[in-house]
Length: 266
Image (cartoon, rainbow, N blue to C red):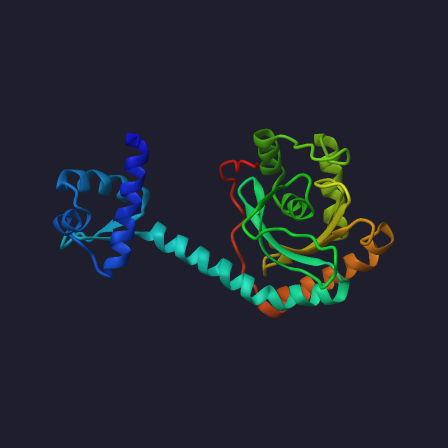
């Protein structure tokens, strides 16, 4: 095991030890519980303190989980809560369209699928929750790009480039800009066999009180069934359900997404 990997493992173990303790611990207590020398414990603590993952009480000098861990826990809870609360609307989409419904959020330089529900048909679209997809060639990704400042969109494209998945994939900056203008004007986004041949997807945004896109709600199906002729009617259904979901859930205002490091796509 390399020294870097061992350091990361020990830091994670320390966070786990503090969480499991349910109370602040001293260096001596951490040393005893983790079976590491006090000098090693102190060195790891300094790194975690600098990153906000650990907090030291200025009076008793004991250590506890820091604000960054609390923020991670809060984010995970909000994500789980959003999936739980949106599920009835995913089911409504499945019932209304006969296609697979999905929920996604912005995840760095990609979009991550949080949930999906499938119809009772022979041919379904399977998108594993937790999987990521490029922003430039997916319906959900275009929704997030259309909501970001132009400088952030340009930075993302410079970092990850254009990923040509099919002959229909957008592979130029000019065409992407035109596409994002269309998304803003029509209020929904489309993946017209751009990520996978034979598959068409449509999504509409879930907006918070500030009018920012916090998630994407949509459907995916085989292009032979989800035809071009169905797009106007289906896109309207999706928009209505997404708007009602955002209203019913009373989604709170969120901060404008900040640019984060690149997400590598397999």
